[in-house]
Length: 635
Image (cartoon, helix red, strand yellow):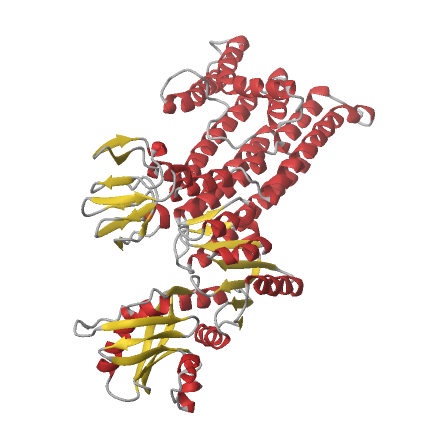
């Protein structure tokens, strides 16, 4: 039985879905009930032929689609399928007068199909919900006026207008003063995001407050929401190793049980004194019903569908069911630092005035750093204070060292220790030995003070490390291209097991290779930048931070977290583990029950009703167990 959104009971007639799905089972149930009532209470009024008619009518609505499906698979060269087993078993049961049992097998099978269809639609619904997010139209500025067009026809550089409540159709840069956006479709976060002029905005985001304009930077096919949808749709077609194994197992297992059933019918003739063909045929038919691999073939793919759907619902995109298996086995987690555990934005952590006061120090700092576009300069120039009275001129940037210029007719230097020493500025030993990113300021040859600049930790960075340790992740590592002293300080603050700084991309690659050689378990790497792509590809599970981050990292990674929250990695691991637990619960339950009832059936101790439970009943239980994934919480 294949996991499909539409069961074998669907046809091309345009009738309502509910009727199309449930009508065959309803008719069959009513006719089966009529047949049983006729058999037990109407024998004085009805002949045996009339009873056969009731059961025959009951069999056709649920049995014919299965017989047809079995015939189609035989024409394709695949004989030993569950459809073949069900057909042989039920037709045989009908032939030897076991009418209620024969109809019941097909009826319960059809009910199982209905449960399966509903469960798969629910699981796929969580994944395909993103399809409703893809914008269908765009207001683009052409010939001096806004025209409604398809997003596919909009080119890079064109201007879009987005009204309140509308979705941004393509990725771009905000050219309005400000905007407030709902990015839940992309990030899974309900908290609105504030954006200012010049910042990037992404397709699928909803404009919340006022009319805005956006300059397009990517074509529709390359937009964030389109890229995410492609990854989600591809994920459902990539099978896990367990899923592939079960399918291969079913192909070998099914013909074996058919031959065993045949042997069970014929071989006793040579050894049993009072051999009754119908009795042994009945046992063989029971054997066939029990041996149907429906519970395995249905519930295992459904379990992975549930895992992928639950992950998508939580803003985590697995690029295939196989990565649900792998992430569950991860014991070593390697983090990139900047943009993964830290915000990737420099901020002033400390202000130290050596001569004069902090206000004067920061006034000169802000004045001169405002002339540079360097990230560290931006962190200082964003300091909140008024410097209208300061006049800046003759600013020159010394590569890798800092700035030299004139502020209010005074020579000002702002930069690192190397800049100060190179210009004869005296710096005391204590200041020289600070193991942090320090920017110093000197006025007219005298050191006035310094600020400590740091890349701030993400709000959930500490909680992420604590949560991962609780999950039993035995080895946490941080690799960074930042200075060794800065890297070690952050690692100590987060209580990460080991950390290395001053690493080039090829150095990170070597370190991860060494870790893989030493570890007996799976290794995951979490990064966000282009320079992380080689390591993401090498690791057992590559996790890209931020669905809106580096395109190269996202394309290379096996798992994409749609937000900038590293704590989502905890949810990803929990979902992977829960999926694995449920899949193996279903495998053990299905095989265990079948084995017991097979032995009982071969010995004549189980009838067709027990066989129905061992097949369809266990399949239903397995489906219900798999559905639990869609209702679990991983907070």
